[in-house]
Amino acid sequence: MSEQSPATPAQPPGAMAPSPITLNLQFTKDLSFEVPGAPQIFLNLREAPKIDIALDVQARRLQEGQENFEVTLQIRCEAKLPGDTPAFIAELVYCGIFTLTGIAPEMMEPVLLVECPRLLFPFARNILAEVTRDGGFPPVMLAPIDFVALWQNRRAQQQMAAAPAQGTA
Image (cartoon, rainbow, N blue to C red; front, side, top):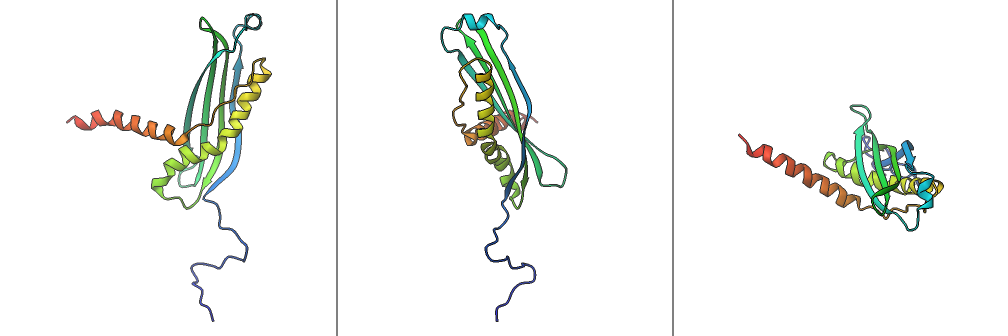
């Protein structure tokens, strides 16, 4: 005769344990594409523009005491022709609503700022490529992002900013 603990009910055969990260919903919160010099810019477009990318990740708990979070991936793409003439500006705010289950408190930040954006990135990348192509330019194909390095850089900056405050009496 086998014994089962009443605190841990047996899972049916073949049942999978719940995932610690559940992506409930993903959506475009804001999307902007502008070509300030149109239509003349297309007449002067002789070479590929220089493209600057800025990326930021934010996360916030949706309701206190709950395990649901909104993770926001913000991408700004600014293309310039020689002479710093703006070709286009694309801004995308892409979000996901995540449920985190059974994650240790010390792991919440890296999960929210590394793993969750990693799941959102391919979709945001596709939207940016399509909007730039539909805007009359070659599609901007973002290279994969190292979200671990991005998170580590953010933490280092926060620690440097906090260090002088700790040294004052």
